[in-house]
Length: 318
Image (cartoon, rainbow, N blue to C red; front, side, top):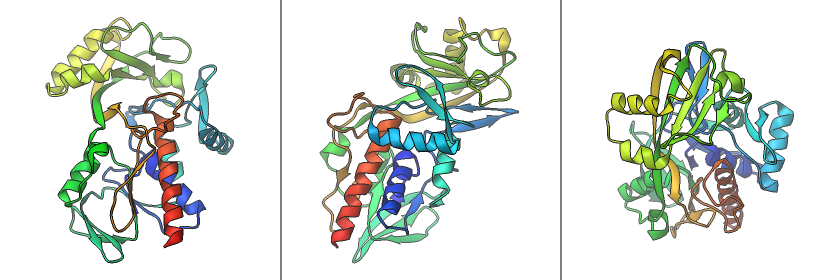
């Protein structure tokens, strides 16, 4: 059983399947698999509003990315020496392709975990009970901690040490495409508080121009409790050198509560000392020799892979 059908969870499921475990079930409280591999349809267009792209630094992800390219699931967007890859129809299109081969139950929130004689019983918000021999949790650390504590399980100091910043993303429907280079992306020399701007018509995934304006984690933390109308107004004010008010047709706001792990831990997963296997993974879990030193698509992939490999080894010994 895997709680969380983002990239870490989907990667873990793939590894377990390759190791001969065919009865893997993924549970996610969201409406679709993917987590921050998120794409929103707006009018006749669409916009990525989580991860915009991913880069590849390790051989493990390089092999997977080559397979995804061959299957037509991803494409090179821009960048050298590390190309930026994106889903051909948005980042969530990659997540959907990855999820097709697994049993995924969305809109299913687990509210309690009970240890039983032969594993775990997961109690859902609707009152359902699902049994599992072992468990991998890939939700953001604060959500994993809350669930464990509600279940009477000590999450431990290492998990509690992980800290996140939130993120605001303004999704701006435009009358005309932005002038921010051929790639439709900019993350340099931006006004204070802005992290990046991407135009999805120039990115090649949207039939009409829609821009995602990302705010930094620090700015988002300072503004997180403010009304959405005030947040939108301030974002557009700061983005005005690139997104002129007369070019704006509509605006939506996305709040990511756990977007950026500002205090990750340098181990690929945590295993709690329970009678039955219970592992916790995600993008905030980095390998000691992590080549980038920060949370990202690749760290989520590597964490899910490492946790599943460890679980498979443990289960084969039972």
